[in-house]
Image 1 (cartoon, one colour):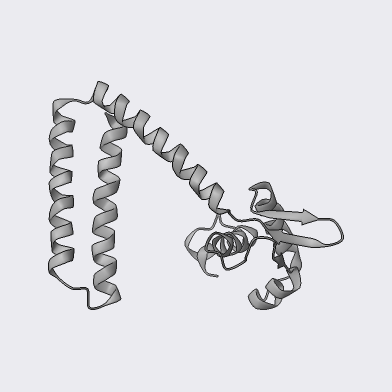
Image 2 (cartoon, one colour; image 1 turned 135 degrees about the vertical axis):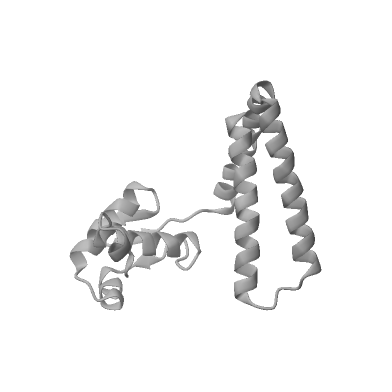
Length: 158
């Protein structure tokens, strides 16, 4: 837990909440699993107070259920939740593209074409060069995310 060294605004509660949130979202805690303060306290070598605060925050985010006299239970996402999220995302992306098409400038179209060309080139590189190490994968993944992110920004700016 060294996140606070990088960002002095981050509290211990935030750091613990980030760890537990990540575990819930990755499915390390199954839906309905009891998450015990004492176990996390021992694992992270911290008092139970910041854990309780993190639990409260995660409860407000809808990721934990607090049941009085029983404890906190992971909520997570069901398959239906994920399907609903993608349905909403698809609808929002369609609206964004429609608006972008109505507002895009010639300069933005040129940038968008350049980004698509980079995206196609990066896919060819990935297919042509086998990934032999995690570091190579990481570099290629970052390139893909960067190109994809730029494309999304251009669509939104349009």
